[in-house]
Image (cartoon, rainbow, N blue to C red; front, side, top):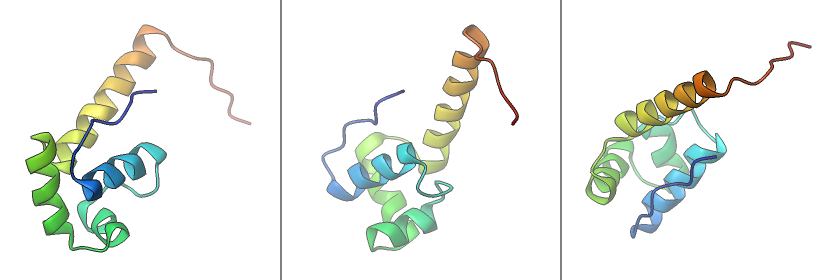
Length: 79
């Protein structure tokens, strides 16, 4: 698994950990509520700490996961 980006801001660090743990659908409002702030405030702090919006960060994670699966696919069981 990919490690979360390092972030000096504790709220951003917690948001990254929550996203990597799959705690929410990784939308700014849900993450903001989890962090005790508005989604917009978390979005500003996230961008300041990482240089990316939450949406862009999650898109990059999904793309990397898809590419990793293409390179070394795992067998899927549907039961």
